[in-house]
Image (cartoon, one colour):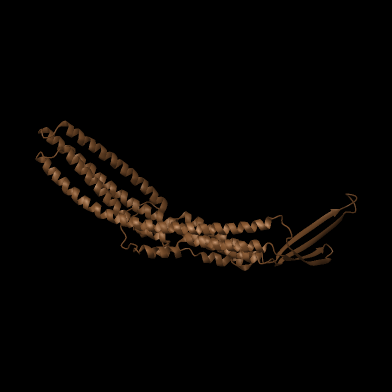
Length: 434
């Protein structure tokens, strides 16, 4: 258990730092960054070496001869209709899309922490209400027995009160079970056991739905990811077209044998497709279909974001109205319970009336707790719907992940034998997150 009281922001900071989902998606982003580096490498010369050794003899025991040679081969693409550069641009758009996906994962992580935090607060208050109710039912049973002794009520009233006490204890047990589940979810989402929770002094401001939707169109990760996928699909069409153009390559070889005699050749090859059996045309049509698919995904993403923003604001209004109504209900049921008890002493109300009034008060107080928690929670749901539920958007005091650091390190596709490559390798081998 934590020693000091924990605010929601404290929970969010811990959840952000301890999230395995964020670690997974950051690794996926680095995979995409390496795809850019791999695409860049296609513009560079490829050099390979081959060593050969051969022993030959007519007699296995006499006059054996040994020959050896070392060969270096170089291949370089001179022109390819722009295919390699288009491939680089495609991978760069994919990186931007994966970055948006990482932001989406960040929102999921923070929203899970928020849900877990508020659920613990709600279930704790519910358990407190159920404990109070069970205690009141026990007191009510003792009072009913005393009234039975003097003939004010019947044995049936005793049985009704006993039944309500048993129901109260069952509801308390269920609430305590829900609290255990809420504690486990909190630990899974935040990364440590839950302790004392307290309210934050600052809560997110509420914009108008129109401004929220405008913000979502600019910032929501689902929309940004879909837009970058569209750009990648457009480039995919250009890549399919480039595959139909001629390609020129330079090939060089250098040989040296055991006698140190040297030889070399340099050749250039130019060629292009004449007939591909329809494969290239099919690939082009496929690329155009993928662009249509990407545009449809963007359309659906905008629809979903618009609906989620509208639903969040509607839920906020409903929860606010429920708070007002539940508070009025609590006030009224408290007065009704007090009046029912007084009237029962005069014989104007039955024991069942008292039990019903007590149950009405419990239900009203439980509804008030839930609606108050929901009002606070939906403020963050609105942020999630607009794409602003991030560590930066919330102003969390954490060191945020900078995807440019790794991307800039590998953008030039450094070789592992270069100074930059060796330095970068040491960072990765030490397990330090770029």
